[in-house]
Length: 259
Image 1 (cartoon, one colour):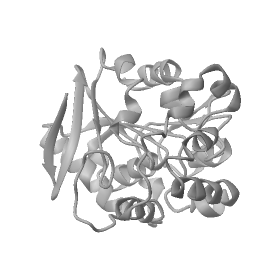
Image 2 (tube, rainbow, N blue to C red):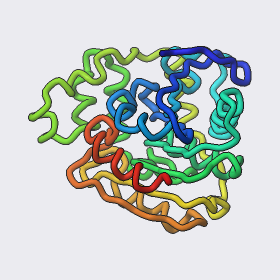
Image 3 (tube, rainbow, N blue to C red):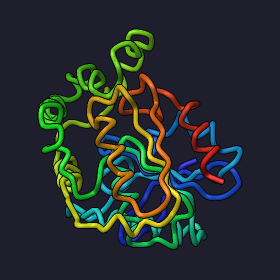
């Protein structure tokens, strides 16, 4: 069930499901809390799963100013406090993984263990690291919803789309370009100089071998930047949207690591 909580001047859409230690899940740039619809049932028997829409996403309403990565991390911390949690396990995927990095650096005591999936270091520009795909994605975003199926081809492997043709409609309901989406793009482009060596929590870094948007080697480069003990996992044949494509496999790794 969706509830709305005031978090630092934003009316934040939140879903809380399950019981056990809290697990907050941070969605990607194109996503919302609904990105976790397939994986929530795989985790809610063991964890209190907290998913929410970040600023300029989903049903959350916020001031019409592009937030910084630090502000999004502060939002996550404030939301945990509003829900009565001093700390939580933290999972961030894609851009949400960069929010998770900022959260762990700025509010380390709030993070019990950290999972960074299909993401890239906070100081790295994805547009520079993978320019061809990022430029193509920008053109496709501008053409939504007509270009939704082409966007799906970037986020899911071709063999998966062939076996699951319904996944081609994943972005059908994505909004067309607007001031809101422009603010989101500005937030994604923020490159704070975070000292990731300050992240002392045990950290799991997950990457899909078929990720076209954030290549696995870019995600795995986090291992040499994070200060705490880091475990890495490669998901064979999995693209960028691992929580949608392989929810059971991702959940299995989370259940093993988040103890």
